[in-house]
Length: 130
Image (cartoon, rainbow, N blue to C red; front, top):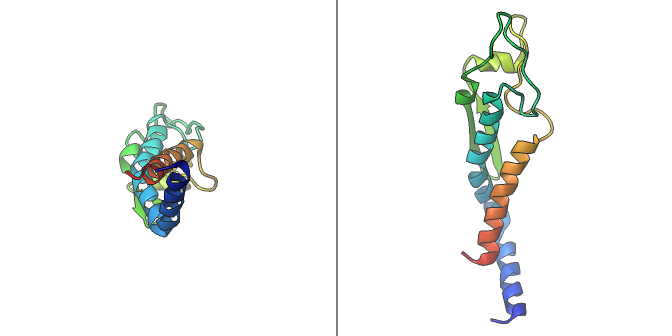
């Protein structure tokens, strides 16, 4: 196959991707996003790398927060869930200081990197025809 035919085949595969291709990227990205967010929680940081306030008695707060983070693909979107008592800390209350666990607002660099890695792999599969 000559260069033009290869390029035309790549273009055809890209045009065929549509929404299902984005769903494939989201499915591949979800575990990577989950691990990126678990890593910042294990480090005692917000998804943006800011340290959480220490406990009043000292020591590391939310030692099991990483275990309560889940990321799942929902069509072309990755949804992140937080369960357990860490939710109260995530939002902050009169009794507990705010310790953000999952992103709110702009996408953190670690999450963007995880999604880009999944998208790169999907693109490579697509244009490579594998």
